[in-house]
Image (cartoon, rainbow, N blue to C red; front, side):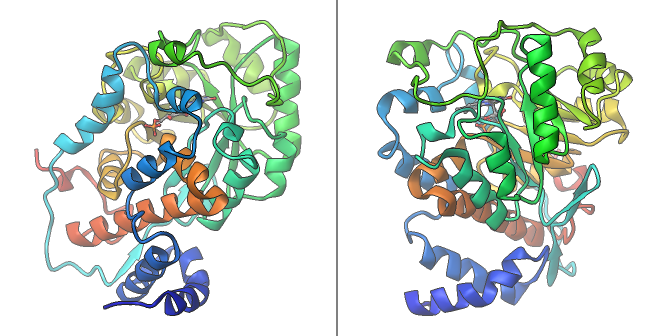
Length: 375
Ligand SMILES: Cc1cc2nc3c(=O)[nH]c(=O)nc-3n(C[C@H](O)[C@H](O)[C@H](O)COP(=O)(O)O)c2cc1C
C-alpha cells in the first residue's frame, strides 16, 4: 500500500490520539507506521539511519565526544554485538490482534517501556538542547532522565511535562549536591538516578584525540564544585536530601545490586555508561540476567547500552528488565530534527518492539519472558 504525503499527514493527525495510546490494534499500527515513515524522511527508517544522518549535523569534535567510548571501545561494540547474538524463538497463532506496551514504573503509568537515558549537554546536538528533548519525549510518550550536566535549567525542562521526569545525579560537594537534589524535586522530578559508575570517567582516547572540551558558553548546572567520590555510606544522606526515590545507575555486579537494595535503592539500572568508562566490561544485556536473578523482583531493573532495534528492547524485557533506556540514538534524532527527531527515534523503536511482540506471539509486556530466547 502506498500512502501519499498528504494522506500521511492527515492520517497522522487522525492517529495522534492513537499514538498516545498504549494499546493498538493491527490496523492502527499499520496506519501509524505508514504515516510516520511518510511524515519524516522516507529514508530514515531505523536508528542506524538516524545515526548516519546525525553525523553531518553535529560538529566533528562534538561527534567524537558523543559517539566515543573508553579506550579501545570494546565494550561499545559488545553492547551492540551481544544483542545481535541472541536468537529469538517465536510462538505462532497467538492472539496478537491488540498489543499492549504499557508498563508501571515506581507508580508511573507509561504507554511503553522506552526511556531516554541521561546524556550531557544536549545543546551540542541542537540549539534548543534539553527543551527540544523534553518535547520529543512528551510527544513520544517517553519517560526522560535529565542529566546533571543539562544545558537547560531543570525547571524549564520540567515545564514541558514529559510523562515522567527523573533527575540523574552526579554527586559533587555535599551542600551543593543537597541543593541540587532539592531543586530537582521542587521542579517536579519524581526520582533520582544516582550514577555510581563514575568515580572518574574512562580513558576517553577518542574524545581526547579530537580535542573536545565542553564549550564555555554552555550553562552547565554544575559549578566549580570539587568532585566527591561517593561510597555506599553516602546513600544515606543522598536519600535523606529529598523524598524522591533513589535508583542506582551503573550497576553490573549482582552483589552491588544487593548492596543497593539493602541501602534502600528503589531501582537498579544495569549500565556500563554506554562503554564510556571501564572498557572490556561485559555487554549490559549479558550482565542483566544475573542482576535480575539477584534482585528477584524486589525493585525494578532497567538496562541501557547498545539498544538500537525493537528486538533489542524485547530481548532486554524478556531477560527481566522492567524498562530500557536509550542514549546516543535520541541524541541523533535531536541533531537531525530537534524535538520531532527525538519523537521519531522513540516511535521507530516502539513500533519495532510492537512488530517483534506480534511476531513472537507476546501481546503484552508481562507476557515476555526468557522462553522467547532460543537458548
Ligand atoms: C554523549 C553522552 C553523554 C552522557 N552523559 C551522561 C551523564 O551525564 N550522566 C550519566 O549518568 N550517563 C551519561 N551517559 C551514559 C548514558 O546515560 C547511557 O548509559 C548510555 O548512553 C547508554 O548507551 P547507548 O548510548 O548505547 O544507548 C552519556 C552517554 C553519552 C553517549
